[in-house]
Length: 145
Image (cartoon, rainbow, N blue to C red; front, side, top):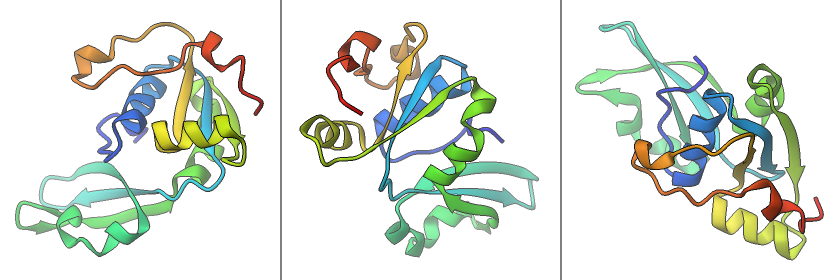
């Protein structure tokens, strides 16, 4: 599963994943210390699989691993940054790993939760009912990644 039905606590990250699934991300920008896990879960009653993205301390929240009264099986668990490194090419994107040591990098991490993308074309995130603050390519020219 590429994460089309992925759940994400951070709206900008969710925008990025949707744009990535659509093939709209030209450059995937990820903070080097991104502390998010990508977990694939399976409900054996419905055979449905889903992907969640959580911070490591949220792993104690058992409700994230339940669907109704059914406990979900963990099929795969890995650091999201590792998943990006293994899969970015399948989306036709390039991968930029950034640091938060510069002012621009720090602003990116605070504003975007450490995950963002430079888009090939404009995506109407309003249709996904999420806000559409995203960098256009010109906005990143000032960044020294």
